[in-house]
Length: 113
Image 1 (tube, rainbow, N blue to C red):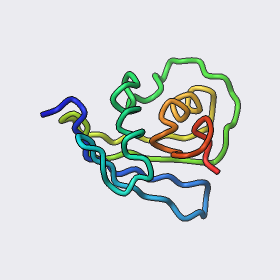
Image 2 (cartoon, rainbow, N blue to C red):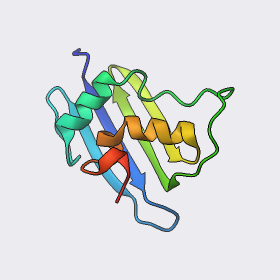
Image 3 (cartoon, rainbow, N blue to C red):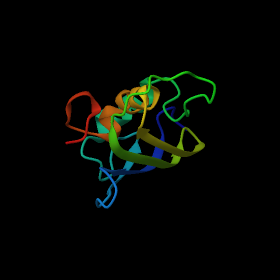
Image 4 (cartoon, rainbow, N blue to C red):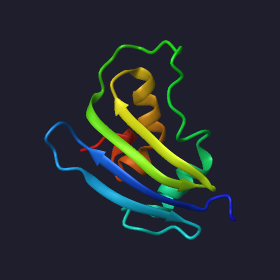
């Protein structure tokens, strides 16, 4: 299996009551319904631990980044993925921003429009 092999479903919601956007993403070769599969695969292949949650004992700047939430489920490099993202504090905003091309394709700094 290639190190970039993936079969993921990405769901992004801009806030409560908003209709979620859902994309599929496959890598090696990049494909699926994601607007930028090549960019998303590149980010997932180069960002260290892209699905790791914020460690529970980490101190995070208490700044609210917005109501957006996202989930990524499926398989990446042969490992099951079930990750949740939000913009509720500095640590979560940093996680979201690192995956900008995955969660918010085509927008600056990973911020949904």
